[in-house]
Image (cartoon, rainbow, N blue to C red):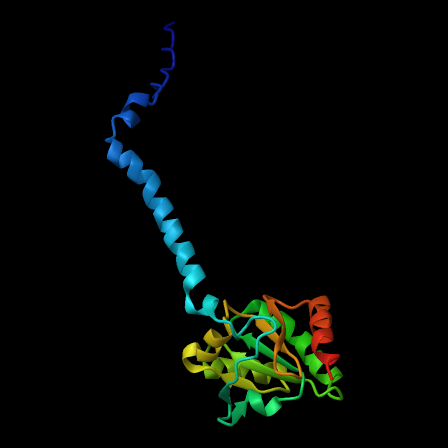
Length: 197
């Protein structure tokens, strides 16, 4: 009876630490410096881009006026709402958080009619057809305005939807919500604009 040969073990590969050290010094320095430079350039761009530099969305500043058309082509001007508390909500049909916060805005608009609350939705980087479908499916009772070229979004310093501004009766930004509104957020922000006389 012949013995089976012993199973062979695969050769163990041991990394050679001298190999990494054999890279030219310039390559090793570049591997560290280039990512740091790219990260710094990206950070500088974020801080200096026009949206971030805009004073329009700052709390306490006058809300930038705009005249935009709704989905039916009728003009809507923020200045026409002077003396009323206003919610300006930047949204898009493709934005999941926008869909989730819609019922909260709808309920607030209905609950505060006697307070003169106006809600204005500004469509952010979306098509008119998709925005119209969104509004029709959800039965929005406020105007959905088109912002071609995102000029108003830039004036307000928008980062992305949803983003909501609470404008007091004095025409100044009293609150700003970056991201999805919760019920508690909405209640807190509404208190800043509904109590003004």
